[in-house]
Length: 249
Ligand code: PGA
Image 1 (cartoon, rainbow, N blue to C red):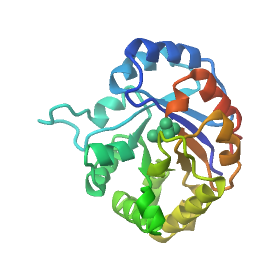
Image 2: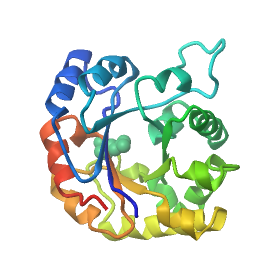
Image 3: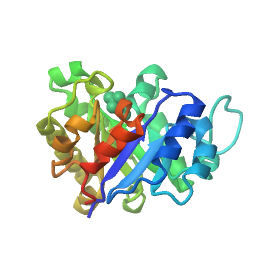
Image 4: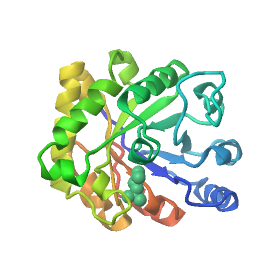
């Protein structure tokens, strides 16, 4: 059975004080689904203190490939692990704005798993790729390279987030059918790479302009196991409303 995951990606959208205030407001939140917030690196230590004992877990928005060394500006999985349980890898903003490719992401994933961090791997196509019917091909390559060499056991700690790039921060959401269709394709790709058991137990989230108003329709789909929320996760109340449409399993 796949337990739903309702995850918020706060990006670099708020200052430190607002992040801590939002954490205070989220502390007593409960749900049948797993709850996760990914603030910026700086907020993690203080938020982990605020959320101790809370159902709301923490994740980082990125990680580096090595544990230690001359890597100016980077943060290691070994250190992140002290403050959070998850890490987002391969968000399209990092793929595009920071030029991260699948090979780099694969290294980040391997090293994070070695450090017992759980992964949320983002995949997704541009509008141009969708219009030219290349969406599935792009996502297949992202999955095949990023998950290359992982064992079935390691896949237990990997969640996929399908985030069509044209739907992120644009107010345009994939229709529930578009999301369901792509989630099924992703499951097929995972089945071919590993086996049907791994495909059936891997969680696949949808992300891209998820809001309280559209969460129910998205979360109703059989192959949608939760959501990765950007803008609408910044307000604790709207994060709560979205989670209220989830149903645990
Ligand atoms: P959005 O962002 O919900 O603001 O579209 C989603 C994401 O980038 O994960």
